[in-house]
Image (cartoon, rainbow, N blue to C red):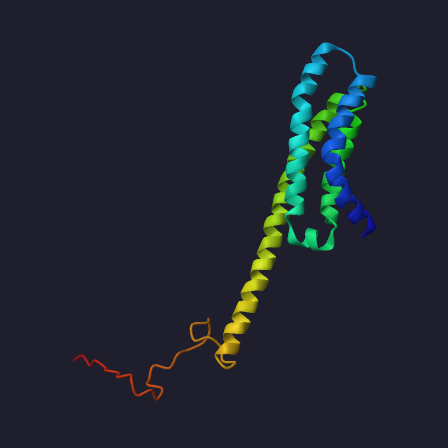
Length: 170
């Protein structure tokens, strides 16, 4: 749980720290003017994608309640952050790590979105179950008449306000 909580805090720090690392790494390890032009494009995109994924993760009620991300988040987003850090060293494999970071960013976005929808569905099911329980309780503990598997009698239940007319065809 400690690792998941630390990662929860780290993802918000990473929104600023990782794009800054790309700039600092370029200043230390990089060279050439065309790479600087690439950084003008890459750094804002990295900032935005890190922010969007962090907001998607934080939008989940379970993450906000526990103040910890899931292990899936740690794995996918952690791999993405590691790829960004490796890209910032601008070695011979920087292009590979850059492509890996792009693929991991896409994966992190979709995994975060999928977990948000899944968590919302669980909460909706719990809310509907509670609603059904309260509705049954208000009816005196009897199941709803329109619930699946409940047969309604085709005859008068004793209420004087109901008149049933049966049509007979020859």
